[in-house]
Length: 250
Length: 102
Ligand SMILES: NC(=O)c1ccc[n+]([C@@H]2O[C@H](COP(=O)([O-])OP(=O)(O)OC[C@H]3O[C@@H](n4cnc5c(N)ncnc54)[C@H](OP(=O)(O)O)[C@@H]3O)[C@@H](O)[C@H]2O)c1
Image (cartoon, protein in one colour):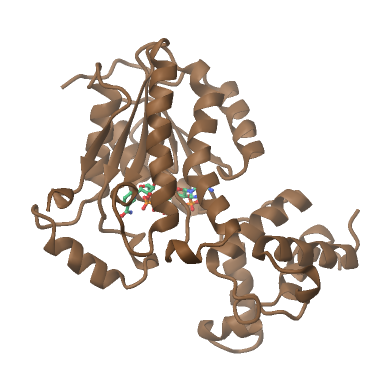
């Protein structure tokens, strides 16, 4: 396993809760010295994470910006630029959508899903990649609904497919700068986002029945893989690791 | 400087645009969830459009708090909120943010 050198900076989009929070902790425990945590509105979650990580000696800058709005991304990038001259790791861990059949998704719902869950990834990379030195790395979090049908998941499923495609394109476009771009495709995780999904108990039951490992994933499972992609895997770019306990094999 | 009537008009247009409705069908008395069939993602969409148009940010679950205030005012529980949450209420909130003295 590779180890981190001193003075490492990471930007985690959607880093205050859920998977992003687990990634923030994981990186902080493994030597990242400055974390930028981007979130939308839950100030208390961002503040409690900041307190927790700062008490472990990590510098944390929490940034409240709406990644669904292009101007906000530009302002956020300007602010980051004033606070650091280098970003070693960039993680996109944000999604916003409505859970219902694709046939019933309205244009504004589609646009918002794409803007927050996909466009923001490309836009942030465009804005910040010049701060990323050779050997730095980008990871985006996708989901298994990008590859196969999941009831009520159409809008986000399509958005995640586009996200994965963007990973491949950016990987090639940034390869000359020796910036690697990869993704994690996650299966259903246990945790806070679960109740938003319709008939979630039934979805959990069916998912577990088809999952060879016999359990749902956790945010820490994802954080572990993200860390590997960020810090190891030095010849890997434009690829996705599937973490689903074997679900997609059955 | 925005006037109350201008804010109400603008909010009605934002709601109509988001929900793909004719502006004349969106009234201040229209209930988001019951009359306009809005969903929670639409409220976010409308919120973001309001923020861009009027140049302020909602903080810390302010919309949820607004709904809570509504429920308290009418001494009803959370499940009755859809009855109360109208376009006019949202406009009032913007008026309160932009013209605090109103
Ligand atoms: N949970 C699962 O089962 C699962 C499965 C597969 C893939 N994933 C993927 O993992 C990622 C994280 O999911 P999660 O379940 O951890 O989500 P979550 O708990 O809802 O956290 C989302 C994070 O993103 C931030 N955020 C949301 N919209 C934003 C916006 N417009 N601008 C800026 N920040 C915004 C939130 O900030 P606030 O706290 O301020 O709202 C929060 O920090 C997503 O890409 C999701 O698709 C999740």
